[in-house]
Image (cartoon, rainbow, N blue to C red; front, side, top):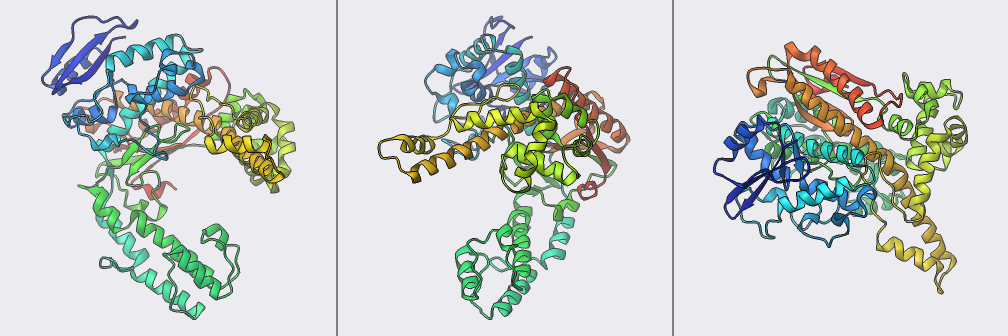
Length: 554
């Protein structure tokens, strides 16, 4: 394997070539035309090494250059800095540096990499990519399991390429259809600062029921006051709580909230901002959630509601293949735990298989019980079903229970390929200290137990959700290669990924290749299972349908 490290030096780009063992194979080259250089060297099938894919790859794609493989040093550093598999490495034990800037979207960021164009001066300085690459190679070689962590880093870096390619290609969206769907649901497009007609009509209904003009459903505080004046003792404006209240105003209020969310998240402003030239191009953030799931830093890519999916329309002569992995997380749990009885139950519909095992009586109960096992629900119907589920599938339940106990003790858990959970924060640590210090009280002990259980629920789910994210990355990476092999004359005449959401992908494909794409989607899912879990006999079935628009898939 040849690795080519790209790095800026002042206003130039330097390329340094390394072999498998980290040996430099020749002098550094100064690159005058990056796209031409990468296109020429790509014939050698190297792994391109750079600090952050989102800073380098978009300009290559714009120049018509696609790369097969890369090493994203920033994403890889974040994994190895925290993984139990590389805990003793020089990388993991070194002081924090520029490589440690957070890419997790639900944590404060020091800087937003997307704001910095390739040619701009870097205000924090350019870290040494070659030195970091060698440090990472050493950490992998000395890790507790080089195969596992190496596969995770390769999959994470492939995901970074896919995210850029999906943005470059864009998800086809017909603006006129989107406008028509919004008009049907909300009324004609309102003037700036005004509510759509349907929301105004619902507000009039609520005012009439409450006999008050002082109702503002867009302000939780004012809405609670208006409900209180009418004798409705709601403690929040969350929909799940409002549904428990019996009052005539609740139905129009819930409808208002649903349509208001649509207006805010995917209304006309969204259309103007994020859809151009018939394409929706959001900012995906691979590894943006602590479990390894993707996030989005703009455009709401991970929440396209059903009401507007009819505007996601394939180009003339093209189709969408929409595919999702069935019951992914419980299947991941059965593979992680090597629970062969659960694997056998998953030969078809997993929940029906659990019923057939005798653990529960209905499919609905099976689903509730499994969700409780993976998310830590210990009360209600889920808690009642857990003993029977434990007797039927002891290995699977023992795995998540052990992860929960580790979290309650403030310990780290690790996914199949090596992504590790963070340690609980300072508030958690303080709560545990207060529970056992000299000033401990029953109240501080109760708070500490609650915090411990909460963190245990997080670690319980972390190993399952995190490993499911790894499976999805391997699925997409394999599918990406398979789609590229369906050779056509031009890159964009090939089938290509245009959307991803946890366990679902959309491929935009020439209609003549749609049947072949369905086969490739399913074959890539089988490959991903074998790649991560070896011979463990767990099925990862994928539902794949060929449609003209996204709404037809559900």
